[in-house]
Length: 232
Image 1 (spheres, one colour):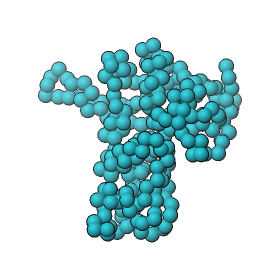
Image 2 (cartoon, helix red, strand yellow):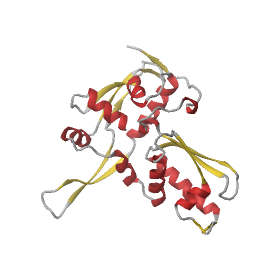
Image 3 (cartoon, one colour):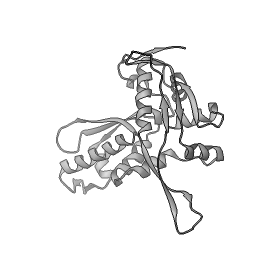
Image 4 (spheres, one colour):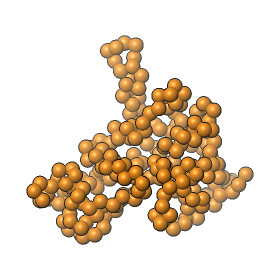
């Protein structure tokens, strides 16, 4: 979302809608050109459009007894252009329309911290804590954490021993990952290492590239997927 905000300032002229090319976002994120990354950006944008956010005190009413709570989205609309009679033959450019509240905030210079908006949309304490923990790895697209270390971080370990059955801890971590995936902060997560216990058992999460402001390392880019695009 940070990349979209940045491009909006550069190219929109203050209007709510801005026409972008896949290459614009790739350059902003430091990603390499190619069909596989076009597809990843398109999928990430669609997930981002579906994220619902709640803004408390979005605008204080004139009557001081009340405050407004806005149920809204980060992106109002995305228009892709697809060649007639095809399924996945997309043009290289598209249009993004930001919601009026975000456009007005940008015009007024009241920039919203999208990270805080997303965090406030997370329901559980564990999901919020994992959000900040994963975000702290600013130069990592994929973050790997040992479950014992992660459990200790969230006080599920006392005196070197888990305070509840291990499967319960794993369930809670999985639920938190699902929340992070639902709001679009991470693309995926997986477990590796030992099948039992917390030691030498690892959680890996892959951040959504739309939220990155640094290049994604080439070794972490998945094998190319076919996505046909044409130039205008």
